[in-house]
Every structure is written in structure tokens, then in C-alpha cells.
Image 1 (tube, rainbow, N blue to C red):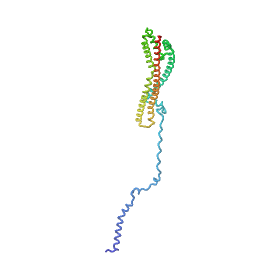
Image 2 (tube, one colour):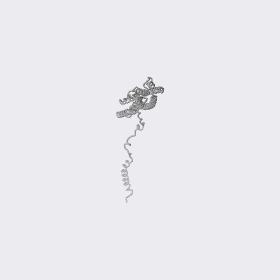
Image 3 (cartoon, rainbow, N blue to C red):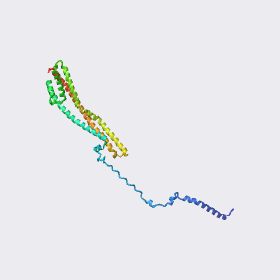
Length: 298
């Protein structure tokens, strides 16, 4: 058994060796995770710097109201800036509308004068006592050009021609004379229908085709506007709106021309039908008067 005093230096030597071997591991555990962060000194200027201010927003771009160099967007500027096809459509529809209103005024005066003259003629006709009086009244200058007066004159002339031909118009040739008088009146009625229907075909054409002509101008204008959008690579409403407005102007003009034309057509058709019915009634009255005079031997 070793002596305790003799073992003391040996124990001290072993402990010193163990302490030296554990020192590097202890130093490694105590080192910081980021050597660069540990070595880099703190920057007081960076810590005290205020946050960066946001850059000021760019001012909004002002949209010019100058359209095609003609000032603000109006109907006139839209027409001036329209394409040749659009201008042709607008001009054609405007002329059609003007002509429709001219027809309205013309036929209003025509029908007004016709009704007044017809009333005076019927009053004079019903006061006639024989076929000679009927012919004299119908061929007077006061009723020149009146359709009913022309019918009466044609019927009386046919009776007089038959009389001058030596036919027995009050006897065996009575029915044939009346038949020829009816045929003469029918010829005047045919010319009356043609006269009263003058201009009606134009009103019907404008009323039925005006919206489609305007729609054609609109389609062409919108197509041209989309081509402009594709070429400029922009969908800014201020850029594309004038072209679309010009296109829609054609549709508006088409409706402006068509709607009055349809109204005028229906109105005058009603008046033509009413006057036609009045003339039919007069034909029956005229033939009855002629037949009565023939029966009396006049």
C-alpha cells in the first residue's frame, strides 16, 4: 500500500493534465454563434438613422379636351372628324330627313286644300238639276283639278258623247251608256290614287331602311375605332371615346330620319284611305244622279 503523502504529487499532476485537455472545449462552447457579428462593432450612425421618406407621387397626366383640333367634343366636331364613309352616311340620312319634313308640309297643304275644295264642289253638285248642270259645275274653273269634279266631268262627257252619237241613252242604250260612264270614272279614280300616293314610297323606304343605314355607319365607325386602339396599344377611354361617339352618331341620325318618316307615312295613309272612301261614296252618288236623269229623259 502506497503511502498517502507519496501519492499527492501524482494526483495533482493528473488533475492538471485533465484541466488542460478540457479548456479548448469549454472555450469553443462559450464562443458566439456568428464570429463576424461578434467581431463587428455596432454602428451608432446606422441605429440613429431615421426611416426613409416615400418618394412623392407623379402628378396625374391631364387629359386634353381638344378633339381632332376642333375643340371640345360636339356633334359638329364628331361629323368633321368622322371617316369618309361615316360622313356619307350622315349626309345621306340628313338629306332624307329634310326631304321627309318637306313632304310632310307639302302633303299637309295638299290635303287641306283638297278637302276644302271637295266640300264646296259637293255642295254645288247636290244642287244641280240635270246632267248639263253637273257638267257645267264640274268643268268650272273654281273646281279645276279636283278629283271628284274630274269624275263628274268624265261621266257627263261620256253621256253627252253617247247622245251625240245618236244612241238612245234613255231607252235601249241606257245600260251601256251607264257602263261607259262607270269606266270613265274608274280611269279618273286610278289617276287619283297615283296622285295622292306621291311621295309615300319614299317615306316608306326611309322609315324601313333608315335605322339599318345608320347601323351600317355605326358598325364601320366602331370597327375603325378598334383598329385605332390596336395601333395605339391603349385602352384609355379619353382616346377611344371620340371614335365610338362618332360611330353612335350614325345610329342616332338613322333613327332621327326613320321615326318621323314612319309617323308621316301612317298618317297620310290614313288620310288617303279616308279620301278614297269619300270618292267611292261620291261615285255611287254620281251614278245614281245620272241614272235618275236618264230615266227622266234628260
